[in-house]
Amino acid sequence: MGETFHTFRNWARNQSATPAEVRAPSCAEEVSRAVRDAVAAGRRVRMTGTGHSFSPVALTDGLLLRPDALTGIRAAGDGWVTAEAGTTIGALNRELHRMGLALANMGDIDAQTVAGAVQTGTHGTGRDVGGMADQVLALEMVLADGEIVTVRGDGEGRIRGVAERDLFDAARVSLGALGVVTAVTFRVEPAFLLHSVRRPMTLTAILGALDTLVTGNEHLDFFWMPHTDACLIKRNNRSPGPPRPPGALKHWFDNQFMENTLFGALCGVGGRHPGTIPRLNALSAAMLSTSAYIDASYRIFTSVREVRFLEMEYAISREHLGRALHEIRDLLERRDWKISFPVEVRVTPASDAWLSTAYGRDSAYLACHVYRPTPNPAYFEGVEEIMTRLGGRPHWGKLHTRDASYLAGVYPRFEDFLVVRDALDPGRAFANDHLDTVLG
Ligand SMILES: Cc1cc2nc3c(=O)[nH]c(=O)nc-3n(C[C@H](O)[C@H](O)[C@H](O)COP(=O)(O)OP(=O)(O)OC[C@H]3O[C@@H](n4cnc5c(N)ncnc54)[C@H](O)[C@@H]3O)c2cc1C
Image (tube, rainbow, N blue to C red; front, top):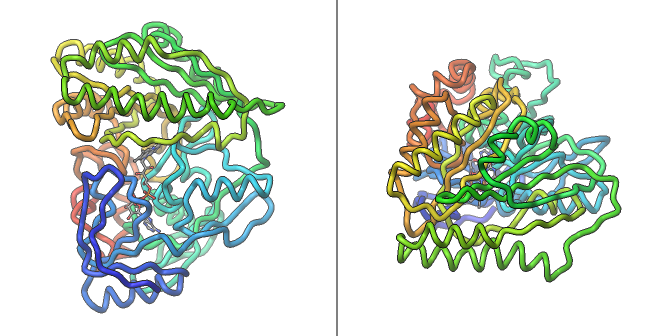
């Protein structure tokens, strides 16, 4: 078990901490020993993923457990696979593909660990299949006293007095507050192809056809360029094939050059000369083009993101999506902000994980981004006011200003979650300052 001392920094470089101790356990038993050692020394414990959360959710001044040595596929069977907690989604995707299997849905990058993604309710877009936590069948966890337990969705036991099924619904999205996850069992299916069609469309046209677009596509995602009426709309639907992947040059042009190199350069110019942003956005909008591919699902779902940004994302009831978009568009027209990053819109079906942002309701997600060197707190604050007025739930891994009193009002099972937390971690071995704010 590696033992080092250093500063932890997240991907966006807006959060950092210097833990008292860092370890990189390679199995559940090593995690168990680390947790027992930390509790005996009076230290709090966090396991991190790859640091892709924008919020301070992963920070600790106590013992930080790194994911690097806890990786790989541990076991697989009929329709399921168990991955070590620190396995990245990308590594899992590639291994599943080799086995002729795939996850049914995921977010739009693959750099996160499976445990980190599940714990914060990471999601992609889907009419029928929800986020990462909705594809989990079981979790292996180390509790505060070092015991290693497996919690199954169909389990009938009790753990620390909590019915296993309740614990399963509480633990899938739990921000590391109930224990250290050491392995995740996912439901998987035979590998499949997606037909991905991307094309420019106006926000006005999208708003006019919102319901049809959502119900008519398995995976609908669109990006609206502020200060314009332009959107790039992505529709991904299953295809019998044959595969028609983008050529290497086209793939590089769309994914590397347009979405990273050129976009990064435009953000840099906009950051130095904010007055040019509306014209730069109009230029980007004019360069949007139509493309269509058929490729392995995981290659269509995920992209590379090299331009560093800060993000806030809220989930609202799907029926409020049109109103929220109208209000955000009006807000940007009224205020003098210059926003270079697109607003992203996705949907998911209702989830049964108690702290999933989609718990109990078909959901729509609106994500606001700003270029990392030029944050704009007033923009986030303005959008957050709209989203909270609509009963929105902030993504647990992204920036927001909500505390436990607000969150208790928008999560029907929030109090039940706190009861489970008291049963599993009465001494708050897995707390940090951020959890004190959002969970109380
Ligand atoms: C470029 C970029 C793109 C993104 N795209 C999406 C997207 O498409 N959809 C979306 O929903 N989100 C997205 N996110 C957010 C991201 O998916 C989440 O913040 C996710 O939690 C990050 O995973 P991670 O492995 O980096 O975990 P970290 O950020 O390191 O940790 C997240 C939380 O999980 C806990 N945790 C990690 N491992 C364990 C463990 N083994 N046991 C217990 N707790 C653990 C940590 O303590 C922390 O509370 C994106 C973020 C970035 C930077």
